[in-house]
Length: 225
Image (cartoon, rainbow, N blue to C red):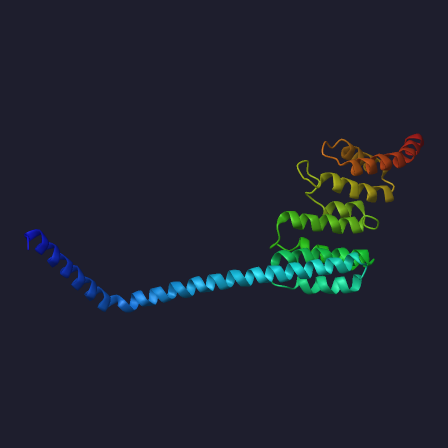
């Protein structure tokens, strides 16, 4: 046997002895770590499966409730959406809360619908865009009864120049101003809507009709001065 082979054999024996010592001392730790990793992976896979099943079940329940609403089975749809709104799947629960408010509004239960929208608007766990949408929907329901000042307070900040809700807010408050006989404010707001570069064709048509309705009132007020 050459010296090189002898050294290699001795080196291997030393390594085996070291490994045996390490295993004897830390073997239980290695086994525990291995079991922990297996359990953690199994738990993660189980959690992912549970989440997927929850999402699928929530999705099925949501679309079933939406179908009931489309079929004019409003009471059943409302009950289904209310149950889903209390569920654990945050996304569908939030959608269901909006649909509950929509269904209440469709049923003519304005105060209850406004309350439901206000609850969404006040929910800090929701994205700001969703809270703002809830504020605007509540204001729409109040446009025929609330004062322009009350609506302005409700929609504070959403009429800023960089707000995507600016045109909608102006339209809502203009309705309230018109009811109160403040035709000048209504005219100013609707002209701001008309000047918006991002105005949809439907919104432009509404603004044009509104301005036509306003003109005789504004002319009458100007003549009276």
